[in-house]
Amino acid sequence: MRREFIRFCKLAWAIVVLIGLFWTPFLWLLVLLIPITLLGLYDMKQEKHALLRTFPVVGHGRWLMERIRPFVRQYFFESETGGAPINRMFRSVIYQRAKGQLDSIPYGTKVDTSRVGYEWIGHSIAAVHYDDTQPEPRTKVGGPDCLKPYEASVFNISAMSFGSLSANAIRALNKGASLGGFYHNTGEGSVSPYHLENGGDLVWQIGTGYFGCRDQDGNFAPQMFADVAAKPAIKMIEIKLSQGAKPGHGGILPAHKNTQEIANIRSVEVGTRVDSPPSHSAFSTPKEMMKFIQQLRELSGGKPIGFKLCIGRKSEFVALCKAMVETKIKPDFITVDGGEGGTGAAPLEYSNSVGMPLNEALIYVCDVLKGFDLKKDIKVIASGKAFTGFHLVRNIAMGADICNSARGMMIALGCIQSLVCHTNECPTGIATQDPELGKGLVVSDKSQRIARYHKETVDAVLDIVSSAGLSTHTQLNRSHIFRRISQTQIKRYDEIYPSLTVGCLLTDKYPEQFKQEMQESSPDTFMPQVYVVECTGGLEEKSSVSA
Image (cartoon, rainbow, N blue to C red; front, side, top):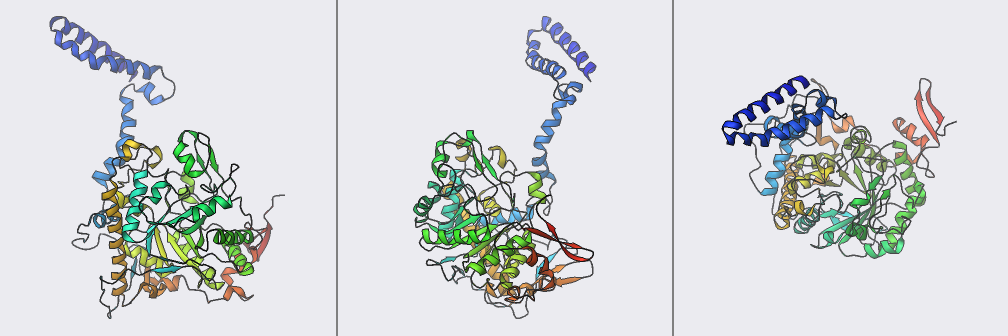
């Protein structure tokens, strides 16, 4: 192709010059020919891309097609059940409900009901009438030690920080939460002025960087925490241990993104690189974490305190429960984030292959809490790909009390899944700090969409519950959900995931399937001091310290 390009240039220049001598307007073609020639010469000389050296000029078509490929696929070739991470079917129903449009579908399901993994809820011949004039059900969050319990909606906005999202996106989400009567999780980037403008209820998330409540060295600052926690809009406080999109991975706020505004909100020095470590410095053992929970409860004046985690090694969660039992200090809620959770930017390996998926994690957390007789005082919040009424119903049936959604709310805001969250070039003005892009998001319109999507989804939950013959969503249990496990076999969730007996992990006669975690866990350490592994001769202990 190099020779062909040189021949083309020689011929093209000769033709343009010769004809231009007799007809001057023909020389206007030089406007195209000059940059094409210069680009081709540069391509042949550069040493970075072999493709361009071999195929000057035309080789750029490869990068052009790579750039437009996601959009061509989404708008022209994607099926209703295709598209990732959120398929078109779910995106469409979110848009329709957010806009108040008709959300029913014609001609039957497009889902393959014979595929392994297909799930549904069993309806009842004795279905009851759903009265949509009744007030939305609420869930009380706050254990015996909580002085200011909070009545939460069953569906809320999951954690997304200002910095990851634009100011207008935060404003719209919070105003929608205010209009709809549900809470808005701040994310670990602290409480910004935009979270407080419209009076929506907030859950303040505190990560390993302690943004908004840290000293100059990045350590937890109790008085700063107390000052922020006293704000009336903050209803609950959530300690972030890990998130599903990148569990066990710290974060970095680059110096060029650390503007004066961000620095003020996060209590850091402007223009400097700020690291969020992968683990907390305020505590290093499960027992210390329980004492930290108690400290936050006292500093906040008795507001509900909980923590969020993605389940990794199972014994570490058992260690937390053992610490709760031993110290008699319990969180008011636990947010379980599935390994399929989303974020603006995460390493591929962490998004794809680190952390337990929500279904298994939610089942495990609820069972362990029940086994230690803790579930009665601790509310469980499920977070991870909850977009429709059935997603919420399934999570509640597995044991969740409340559900959160981040990407569902982003789509209700107008996200088109262009997958450029990490570039600061979000075309809808949601996941960007570019003020010009942010102006495109109209708060008054998008907040209405958020409130409408929330209401329609909760209505769908209650409608499904009534079809199952139940009077309230709290009556749901694992026996209501069915899953196809093979082409010829169907099982209920309670058959796949049998529940534990209350208090069974408080005795030495615990179920056999929990033997490994029970032996490995300790309230004095997160990481096991000895790993218990399955061998041909049974369970054996192996040192967790390298020789």
